[in-house]
Length: 147
Image 1 (cartoon, rainbow, N blue to C red):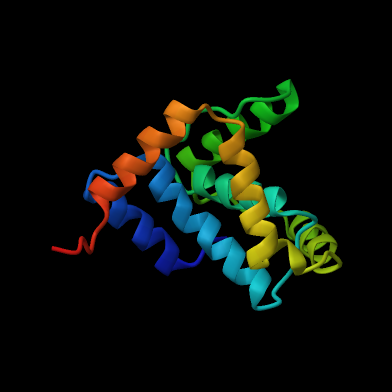
Image 2: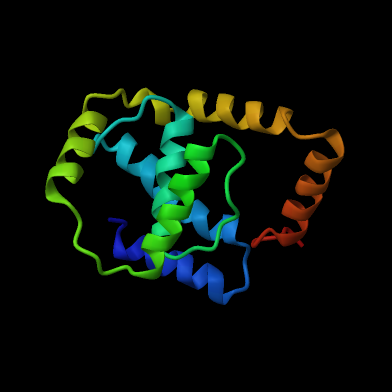
């Protein structure tokens, strides 16, 4: 279950008209913080991001379906459906099993170097034009622009 603070930040982003990926970024950020403070670990930076995106879908953030296997798309659809009915009882047994499995994983997946490596790998899979446009948009939409 995401922190109430995270849900509120995501809702604020939605009110400000920011993209769904920006809203989901709040949940990914929270997940990275959990790993860094030792609440649990993750096998890789990708897993940490995936957990955050899953939480975002369950909190009602409208994200596009992921590219990948049918089982991955099925899980994302399941998360979206869960987001439509947020007050369902969560299985205590399954929750505890997941939590214990994550607790056994390393905290290194949220280190600066592993996140940097993941970011560079994700950017490299995009085209040059796409990366350039993203950088231009980031500069244009940055909050504290130096005047």
